[in-house]
Image (cartoon, rainbow, N blue to C red; front, top):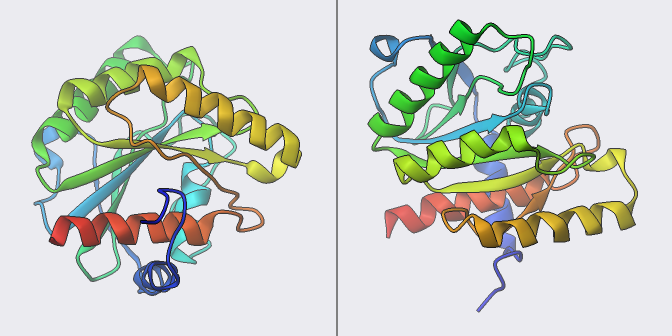
Length: 217
């Protein structure tokens, strides 16, 4: 049997084809009532502000401007839905951990995310992005707890892997894998990615293709 971190050639190709589709914006929701109807399978991307969510989504889909990127923390304040026309749909979740955000805004984000996590029976997995330069932070804890409460499968993905040395990256992966011991709801595989040079993108696509294949069984 393959190790969890290994992917067959067919899975790499299935992931490539899945994300070679014509990905388009579907909807933006800032309240529970504005969430679009469920269709197909959804995967969501969460992470601290400026962790590189939008850049990673653009790299996965091969679209330079599908998801908006910004140097301004906390810009994404809605759940943004995208589809490639097939069974898979992507959700870009609001960034968290931006200290300058008003408490009322943070409360609204929290309520929206909780409603999303509780109410989407087609949500297959949430990918929580962690900056490879900094690792897991205290500001990630509320998201881990929200996912645990909602009983939603989640996986940790390192971003900006090109910004540190190979030795530093290996140490960071080991550090995050150790942290997974305290996160029993998390999928036991950490992938390192870079939207800048494409590192780990084929493997992340393959991981998602594997996830969808397992749901069909």
